[in-house]
Amino acid sequence: MNVIIVDDELHGRENLKILIEKHCPSLNVLGLASNVFEANKLIELHKPNVVFLDVAMGLIDGITYLKSLKERDFQVIIVSAYRDYAMQAMENGAFGYLLKPVLSLTLQEQIKSLENFFQEHSDAINNNKPKNGANNSSGGKIAVTHSNGYLLADITDIIRFEAHGNYTRIHLADGTVLLTSKTLKRYNDQIQSPDFFRIHKTHFVNITFVKEVLNKGNGFVVLKDGTELPIAVLKRPLFNKYMKNKPLD
Image (cartoon, rainbow, N blue to C red; front, side):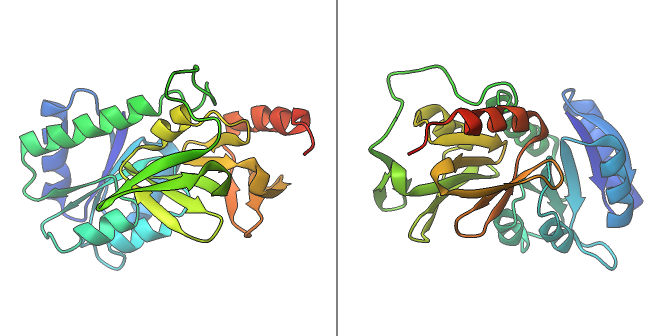
């Protein structure tokens, strides 16, 4: 996994780089940035898998920068000397949160979680649908667990599944949004309905709710509620073929 480190303090950047090189052989540090402007350049140049991002940084802090990253194809791990920003970080899509001074064991545990996450999503480009299995759902309901039990949701009422770090947001037709601890891959594996298509590593969509397909950029689907979702570059040909061959209702 290729990574960049963003921290306005030189010793913070260098210390984390040393820790990674010593304890995390699966990571390859491609660049160090002292602010978000340098970070943007490095992200554009190197297309990293992971960005380690400090919070307290000059004019634009790490959380504000994280919020600005609406569509990204990399994971963000916040690194901070303060615990106070952890909830904000997770709510805005950070994969993890490391407290300074970063301990080697804590770093290794975080990277192990990250490796598992990427392993689960490694089939996102080459395979839209998994092999059939005994626990797959082609219709009916799925159970969505929450703190007090679980909710039975009708498959036909689900507009889309959206990856959110190690969690998944489930958007229902009535406007309800459920947050579950299952990964998007788990739902992709479970649901075998021909109405669902994995258009992007973060979006698994019920195409009956698709109103329009736009050609801007690499392609977007527009849902009936007005939401625009990107189509991954390598998914676009498959998606177009799928939509053209889909029988009319």
